[in-house]
Image 1 (cartoon, rainbow, N blue to C red):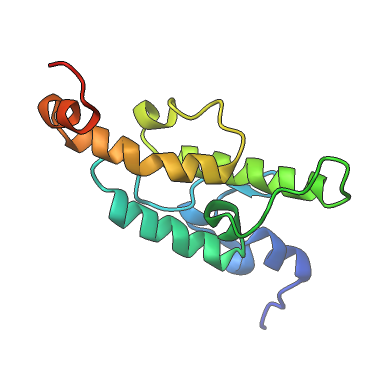
Image 2 (image 1 turned 60 degrees about the vertical axis):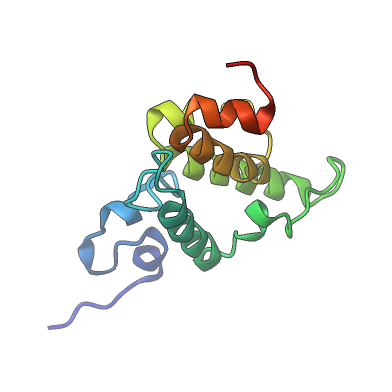
Length: 138
């Protein structure tokens, strides 16, 4: 006897009765979008994984800037704000705690995404090199 798949199983990710860590849901939001945690030295690998996930969820425009923030009085604002907040959470949850703690005040996923290469640069570059880049006294 075969089991039929119903709509609620498809929506919840429970088709077949199991789900991987990347498919774990909490109130409809993914907790873990990649098995790679951004640690400051693995930006390229991590960012490729995150971009692929967001593209698959049709949310890539939030980090590239293609999905523009509507005016607050626009009917589309509430949905944009909700998606934007979810994406910020996905991004921060896919970072080490040390790096994720740097992003609590950012208002858009694009802002977070834009600043991440700097975190990588700061993690992998020594003080002497940073001083010369930014004309800081050593």
